[in-house]
Image: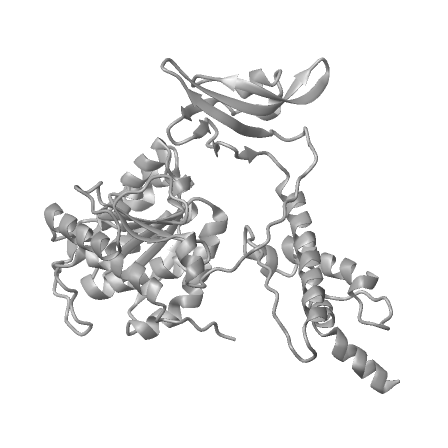
Length: 468
């Protein structure tokens, strides 16, 4: 089975054009059959490789930005806020498709060939890789099958950055912000396999167009400097919930998305876990600023009179140590406050953990995920029963339940934990009287059999009656 993509969704085409038209006036790319005898107008060439080059002046860029903003009904900026360009798209409207197709469009229109997609988490990284794999045939058909390489950065194979820099074909690199946001990371260290150079120098030589997926999670000063260290030609920012908006070019908010029937109403359930004092629990409750100091109230597990109790502590300066504030509990080793940012509402610790106001760290993710899977399957089956009992005979309405998972391998692999939990939930629920077809004996069932039974209970019952 192959997923079919609709190439003519107007709102997606508008979002793509909003970025592409910013570079209107940039010299067009070479034709596919021209011979490359050296540097092109759209390239910078150095001893480290080939890089994107921008021929437009800042004034021309600003004029293009203002034209796009006017076309999309957005306030026109008086000046460029750097070469950062923002696209706001409601969750579930095809944000990943839009920025991946924008890459191909920029390559086809202007010859830009070096792109880096920066993500804040492993889950998003895996999702982007899967999207590239699935959509590659679609984009190949749309754009004449241009040669294209894409891969995930791996610190154990930094030598792959050399072909990224030297290739004259479309190159897409996916990288976690954590892989290059500190000087101690492999990409920032001199490497004998890279002729004694730092691997990041090859990235810098490529002068890439950088795409930030969920940039609100990469707004610390450390993250901003790290992104700047990539030497980007420009930075494209895609999210539904931006913290900061720079040169907003396109907006598809929740109201407009709903009006266009792009998103459906959803039901949200929550799963809470009991306290577990064997892990370092940290929750940023509030951050407040006065004229003299900034104070964050943080909930942690504190040892008091021989007992562990959850308590709120106040910290107001860099260097505040949660280990000391917890009564000397070793599980908080490394949780020393590095920055309290009241403007953007987050606290950064020395071990790299960054928490926004209201965020917590240290819960048992496996226990929560397992409970969520069980409750989702149960809710799905309940909804199926309710709808099918209400519909006339022969009518069906599909119920859709979505799982957002951390790693594809956790379901695809036969021993993947998410696959196991899903099958267990289906088998447990299949044994319940509520989810059995009329007259059926209790039995254990896999996911497919269970869902077929719930979706078509009447037909099964009719077949049983005819057979008896």
